[in-house]
Image 1 (spheres, helix red, strand yellow):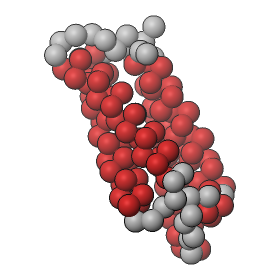
Image 2 (tube, rainbow, N blue to C red):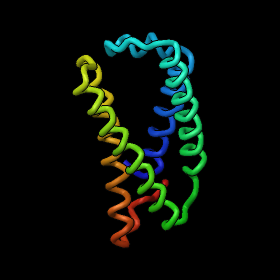
Image 3 (cartoon, helix red, strand yellow):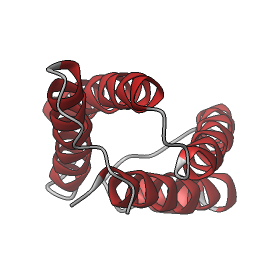
Image 4 (cartoon, rainbow, N blue to C red):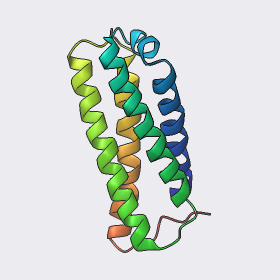
Length: 131
């Protein structure tokens, strides 16, 4: 997999998840065994808006070629996904059902993918080809 493909996957997952969390936060979280108050739904809708913004930003940087820029993007997206993985893991240990493990795994894979590209570019190897 190349860097552009990973950015595309991240962008699509973020935008689709964001739309879902804006439109039906209560129903989606109920499938994880989580019940929300009205204010909890609003907070998840804000999170959905943030995911859409992050997805659109990620989509827009896909054609950029500068290695230093790619290295920074890989670092930041690895950090975002890594932190999200830890938060998802915390939610899992707090009582979400087995479906919650899918969220942990997706964030973990995205963090590892971006971390891989960051480490390779930080060592001076240009593995972040977008072709």
